[in-house]
View: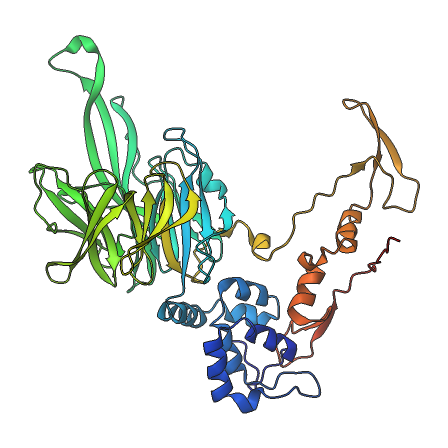
Length: 525
């Protein structure tokens, strides 16, 4: 493990080690008490941890990403170790093995046609919280999408967001890192008859052989020409050319690939990426037959599969999903607001696994949860959870405009996507404090304040030279826990910490975060 000292011992303050242990589940604590109990007993005279550093990292990889983000500031070896492929893989596999799922809900509250305002809500998965909204995430690049954005994935904890106007982005909701992909390599040719380029279905997945994340996208180039039957009508849409392109995160570029004989259509409601393949509903260019179209992320080849049931002249709906590591298909049955759902699984051939019968008052399925429970959109356009074993239908009290909800269940991952972080300080629970330079009250400086006049407001104001006065007011008011000094005190129990800038083998540097002012209590009699 990168960053280990020569002695293999942790030079981290012992109070910080116990702060880390406090965040672990009881099951993990029981294991460490039984296996490493002798080494964890008591505090040393120097208040240093005598715990082997390998054990410290064994503890750290069990923590959520939010805690690891905070602990990166402990020392350089920790920060660099969190970014190694070994730690990232071990951390993700641990949470994957224990099925530590997180939930994101994409939705819109208003109807403005294709220009709805979409946002993400992070739902609490803690027991007893009933999937309440824990945090609302507004992404600037996401809000600028010109059409209804599509969500692809998750794949190893990463989501792909796309629209139909050449805008694609990768997003790691755990680290809040995002990357806007470069423009398409397929451009409208310099021809007078070319109208525009349109971007259709997309897919997102992982190439395990090259350790690369890839995005595949269908592109249509539209041309116009004279109508042979009615030349007097002038230019009309006449022809189109279908193409496919593939993006590689490793090379950060697009390339054109061979076009399949089946066109992809339909938006993905569930996660269509399963074991290295991405799947769409497909229609033949020539025979107009319906298929399932798949794309192999490793070999970069398309292929087709049969549908679970043959197409009929009636209405036929199908949603693809990852069902316990196999390709699954969910077929809704019934009309009106009482629906049944057939679940089929592809394991060499299509097999019907089970049926969820007669769920009242629902419009459509959104996704499965841990114990076979099913998230649904109710006829009142609220998020509900259905338990097939008890037939209980629980209203979660989350509303959205009709047909705009999309749920993503993902496992946290520290994997970098070579992008930038949108809200790094927000993840550390920092407060955004406005420090105005003009005020009605003079203060914050010992010298005589500068007096100015606001012409539009016709007011006399004082200009502040020391805007930190507002930060001091927060501390006096008891809100210092969200400031830097408060974060240090909350994590370590003290304001002075040791920072090993040059590694654990060298002398540490003491950094003092003690606030330079005191808080006073006032008693009213």
